[in-house]
Length: 184
Image (tube, rainbow, N blue to C red):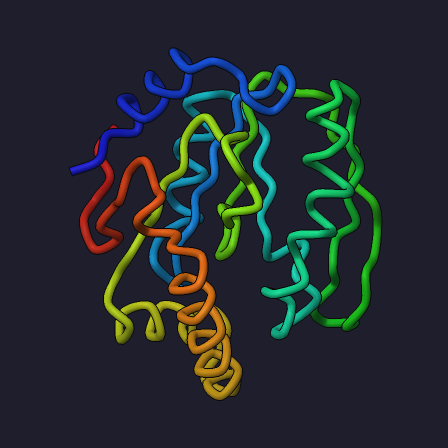
């Protein structure tokens, strides 16, 4: 089982790899438990969290999120300057307000596609959270509503292709079973 304290200790003992920032990427399929783990780890590290759900350009945004993340967040932080990112409003179907992010000591980046090969070695820790397809779908529909079943099926197909192409699980430092409780 995974321990939040153990993950945090691993991050604290690592060298910054994104400028002066220790970046933690929590990747894996939707509904696997990434957000829960990210919240607990961010609390332990007293770190800000960026959720890729706030950056995807809607249901088709998985493939286009990385260049925007690189330009708005990772590039500036790597250069030692504050970053600024624009939140996508899923209800309006458009980008909305901007958020400022001063250079933190730690940053948790959470979401499907948060650790592609383009990330290189800039993350201090990459965690891949996984859970069975049926459970992930049930969690997603409980959160988003059954009216979005078709969108969830399309998203799951996109992210499955993404993870195969990116070899995300194999490149992760830690693989977490999202069906098991995470220890303090």
